[in-house]
Length: 327
Image (cartoon, rainbow, N blue to C red; front, side, top):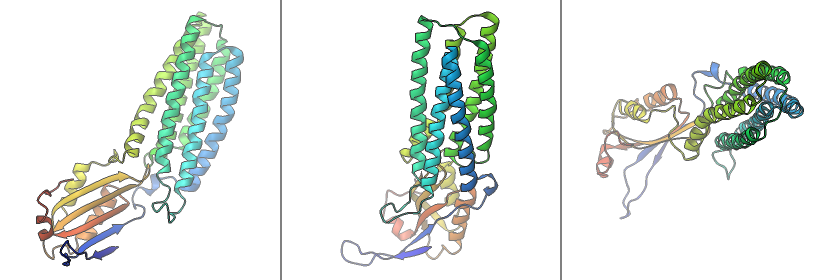
């Protein structure tokens, strides 16, 4: 949509007309990789159900067998269930239409869900570390066979759950977080199996808290990128998949564009990117440039909501701080 706007300066005189172009919607490429709302809901429901059942079973076996590694893994899986519920709830909330008060809708809920997921995982890490240190000072016997059997079940369940989210993990950071958590859980369960076999072979119970600390390290390593990315999105940083210099250069190459300034790019959600920019044209040279700019934003950068202000060269020269390609 192109919106002409005429305003008055401080002396009451009409300023030159500026053209605003707004585009919104979903980009047209890579639809085959995105999850539909129905498929996402189905994957979340299956993932939550499987992991919730497994958490109860794993915690029970870990408690009665005295395995801290199983208890730690159960705690991690419990936090993942909470994380899946947060991601699922945020995804549902993001689909609600805008209101007169929330004019952009509720899409940013996915950003806050990702941030809360990271914080919950860090809290679980501290709890695991605390208990592992305590177990070093007061070791307890562990049933290695129980660890192996229960953790092996976890490998199957976590791998199956991770597969559910592969399809949407490249398009949506919220879905990618769920996928990475499940994939990490599968790897952690493999570690518990190894610890159980080692305990049965050597009889060294200290292997259990050591594996717990390794599990904690894996969780922190897998969570750190999610945490930093979610903080960036909360602070309206340019999404990581967008190269701002490449974007600026691409818009500068639009026919008729002499310079670009006030370029702002931020994430409206974990998957939707918004942009505003001022494009300076020579007089009457913007014909055909609108469609070219729209094509670049949609196809090269998957930016689905943009507001472009078109200015003539005489307007830009009135602002000496503006330079070609500035952001």
